[in-house]
Image (tube, rainbow, N blue to C red; front, side, top):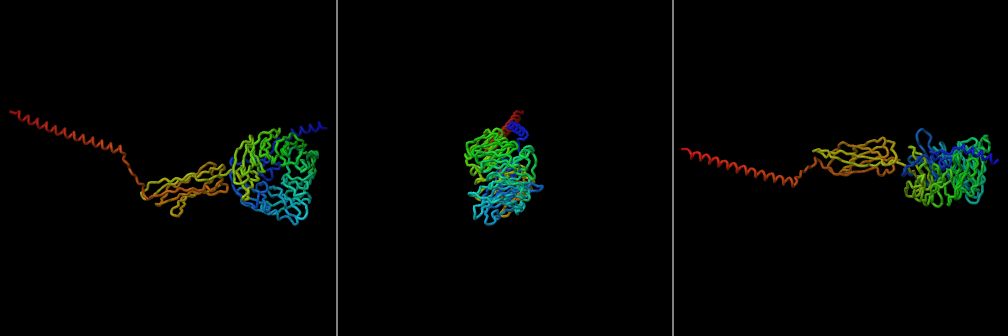
Amino acid sequence: MRRVLLVLGLVIALLIPATTTAAADWSMAGGDAARTGSTNAEPSTSPAVLWEAPVSGPVLTAPVVARNPGPTWEATVYAVSGGPLTLNAVNASDGVLRWSTSLSSFAQPPWVVRRQGGLAADGDRAYVLLTEQNGTLPEWRDVLFAWNRANGSEVWNVTGAVYTSVGTPAIDSAPLLVRDLVVFGSGDGHVRALQAPTGGLVWDAVAGARVSLPVTFLETGVALVGDFILAENDNDQIVALDVNGSANGDQGIVDPPGTGDVVWITSLGTTAVSSAVATPAAAYAAAGSRVFSLHPAFGNPMWSQDVSSAVTGPLALAGNVLVFGSIDGKVRALNTTTGAVEWVRALGGLQPWLVSTPQKIFTGVGDSMVALNATTGDMAWTGKFGSPVGFASVSENATGKGTIYGGMSSPDRVVAFGGSSDLRPLDISVAQIPNPNAYQASIDATIVNSGDENVSRNFWVSVTDSFQGDDIELANATVPYLRSQASFRVTIDSWNFTSGQHTISVEIQKLPEDRNPDNNTASYKFFATVGPPRVFTEWSPAFWIGLIVVGVAGLGAGWLIAVAGRRREREAAEMARSRQESRP
């Protein structure tokens, strides 16, 4: 029998593809249903603050981003904040609040909301898992709410069975969206799958103990194997549940409407510290200081690696490496095929988030955000933003590049970081035009987009002359498009200036995506004098010496000529007198 299972396992390994597709949106914890923590939308090489949206209290979990329905690119960022517990929906492009709703107000006495368990969003609804406690008895229950994403109104809610425990359960099982289902684990040890449009129960599976971490979708792509929900429970186990009733435990026969059957259970030795990450070829889990690669069909370890420090999570995939943070302040990368350590980077106090792209790993360190090279672990970028970025996710923006959405405090706010335009005046020049009646000059103003994103919308540039408190607009040009590092020139061919002090100002329209709108203006002061410019000709000392020499030479030559003439006159007179005396 073991030989048959071995052969079957080898066949399955050959059939299962080895890659997974990263999400463009970040519509649930971990980005996609496989919880890969990855996106193909590469952020800027030096992310800047794009916008900040104030919220009611600290951001309690990583924001999620879902694209809005419609032909144009629009998306909404959802974040749960505390004090009081509130669900916020803001525009992904500019951070403008669309709506917010108090989650605490939906608990019916004697029940009170104790914790939020994460959120998810699709094209129609946003989903939030809450844990409520009986105000008079040691009882708890989990409630999943669905909100209309257009206006924040309640669509439906489902309340789980009441359970008892010592202390408040740590319910962090953020909803999983897969195949029109919403799947989540609960403090009562169950995993439930509901219909996304209605909240109707599809299946209810017993996972053996409390499921406090978000469950994960493992899609093998092979009908013989099937697809699973991976749930990590507080009994140190990872349980694979048949998501649609067609896994190998059912021999490929569909059990309508799907049962959530247990297909395999693997002991991790200690409680998992992060949601499992899944690819068609393997599932990856971390418990204590050990990381596992599990066979997708049977759950047996294909490799395990002890990293000598407790893993803090989350796990994320970056190409062919699995990356994660540890309690010793180091980020590690393991080869997904062999488990070998590819690189280790010591950073210090890590924030509880980590996301990856094919090229970089982003995480928070103290009050900084850093990016590591995914291949080598070398530091690619670091930036300080005044306070720690407590949670973050990455989603594709309108240009196809990545934007980082995170939570910050002091004040409490949702912040977007990413590549951006940076419009600023480059120079202003005034060139006088000769005019005997007025101070006339031409004006040139050059602006530049020094950011790393193109400006893909119309914006205006204004040039103004200020004189004795009066402002006269000399030009107002509309720029339809400006690429990164490109410039645009505004020219006024001629302008007559009144005598006195003038200030030429250039102002660029402030755009929501502009990196630093405070540098959108510049000015140039000068003094204008009416009439043509005074021209003075200076004679050099050499000229005067030369002139004197020439003058002296001229006088000398005249004197010599005069002396010679008088002498010739005397000689002629003497010759005439001699001739007369010699006649008989």
